[in-house]
Amino acid sequence: MLNATWIETFTVLAEEGHFTRAAQRLNMTQPGVSQHLRKLEQQLGQPLIVQAGKGFTLTAAGAGLRDLGLARRAQERALREAIAPDRPDAGLVRVACSGSFAMLFYPHAIALMQSAPRLSIHVEAAPQARVLEGVLDGRFDLGVTDRDPRHPRIAADRIGQEELCLVLPAGHAVPSGLADLQALGLIDHPDCQRYADDLFALNFPDEFDGADRLRVRSRVNQIGQIPAPVAQGVGYTLLPRSGLAAFSQADRLRIAALPQRRHHELWTIIPRGHPRSARLDRVLAVIRALAADLA
Image 1 (tube, rainbow, N blue to C red):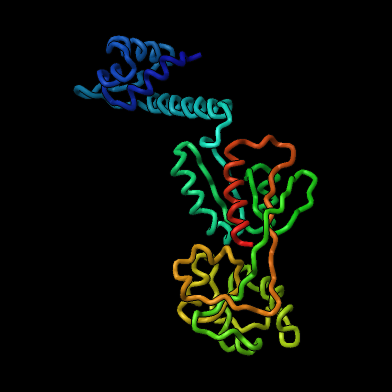
Image 2 (image 1 turned 30 degrees about the horizontal axis):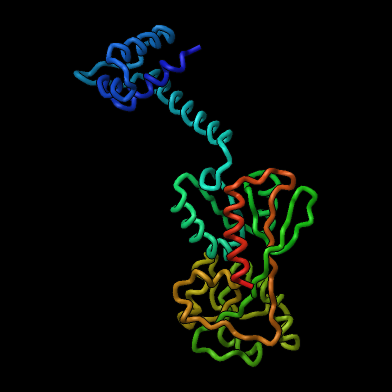
């Protein structure tokens, strides 16, 4: 078996590209670095470097050994992090949620990481079914959904609700009927027809006969771009309030006050029975606060 100390010596030598600098970094003598190199070459039965003037280049075997050394370092770091004391400012938290909630949450995730350089937060915008699947199979530590999945391996917690909004250009009057919206045209997106079936069936029951009958002016699947044409006076759209929170031209939009308001619930889901880390609790606290502000 190759000696771990010799491998680390060689890895540093490969990184520095210079015997003296490697020795200084390792707090060793230069002959000591050379001795570790020779012992490795003897064990492997082939040269690891080729001298080139005062410097050297790595052979194919040398490059492979350097990569092994780097991989071992990464494995050791991962092990140390896994067994380190539970801290709220270090480690990784993987969050999945709708695109609209991701827009609201991600700036706060950035602020958390700025305050805690060793904290990593991965955020994935995903459909509700994929959020649940990812929490179940371990890809995500935390999910935000619009319902309790009522799954035996999931612990769900209702954290609030958010309004489903009819979004108009700022100067547009609140529609007296569906015909006014048909004239304006819908800015469609992947969840929009589901939202229309939900909200319009409540407010225009005599006129609305299905989202597939709505006049579509444009379609876009990037959540951050959905309000943009509405702000320019091109159409209307339907979004949860969280999808508008981070939009930079919010003053050019109008949320119509419809007679029948519709709210979607917000739930956090985590694997049932798994110990909760301090960093996960820290992220959960931010998400709960954001949900409370949306209510």
